[in-house]
Length: 470
Ligand code: C2O
Ligand code: CU
Ligand code: CU
Image (cartoon, rainbow, N blue to C red):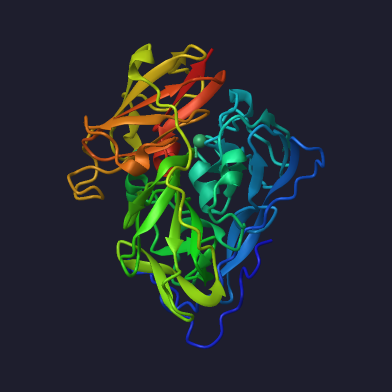
């Protein structure tokens, strides 16, 4: 369903990246960035929305003539964008046409546990699941993906993921780029390990369980080395790190400044000027890049640690010129004095023993019980240890902490106030080796929810627990 997917490459010897290089393939001919379609809302009534989602198997040609077995929603790889409004009553009809069971989790959505789509909401092969939920949160870029116990990594890696966008009166009223697919662009960034024949599979070895599965090729919306034509003006990029394990450090090739306007759970109060943005697995950032100073034909690249993986081609078209609003929204700060307790979560262990607070996931055990509507501080510690010389450098690795059904605010990182781009709503937070991060949240939805490391191989190995709000 994604336009241009699998566009044949012409000319130049096809030369997929080898297993041992860490460089983005430059041999793949660039193709236009596929833009996932907006999923049709089948309910014409205002304030209501209904969507059909089918998890299905297929094949996708990432390199010329080489078909990988993939999964997708309503297509062969990835899924359409579900777009709703705050206040909508939403129904989704999820059909599982995979040969395996699956679930669909709404990552970042504040819904009751029964609609959250976690490991308790398994959909057997051939079955359907029809959750209904109200949207009760501000405009944001969220996403959806499977959450089957021990199989999340495999199913996401094969292609099950899509963006879930909420709009509201504030996002409508702001003078920012908001034409979907024109100057409001989803970028789902994922890495894959292609084998020398140009296909990928989900094969874990011992190293991958430690580090999470990380690949040598970065895909954007399922395409290798895509380009995007941009007008001479401001463009909004909704960047989702949809990778299983990798943390990115995004930059533009000319070190140009950009503004981050939203984090996981919605707009920041003010745009944050930055030259790079770090996103661990599952984190999102909406950024505004200004192409108005460029000439027609200029190109600019988006890079990760200096390696380009997609480019922007500036056209002669005049784009969005208006200055960014100085104030995007207001976020009511949760006062730490409202917290009834502080709960501690410690990431520990390595390899198959990764755990939280010394425990590995047990679907029959509730680890934490929270009273409905109470505010708590959660203190998340990444106990260094694990990979020697792994990412993070000092003998440990990053663990992104994620909690379901709630958006939180960051109080501090090792006692220091969070950087400007972490002062808004978050549902996933990068915790570096040795670091302690404190977040605060009010738990307004009842049910059983997961908290876990969003390195999917860690989650699948057991770095996950359950909290019940009652
Ligand atoms: Cu992105 Cu538990 O999920
Ligand atoms: Cu989630
Ligand atoms: Cu982890």
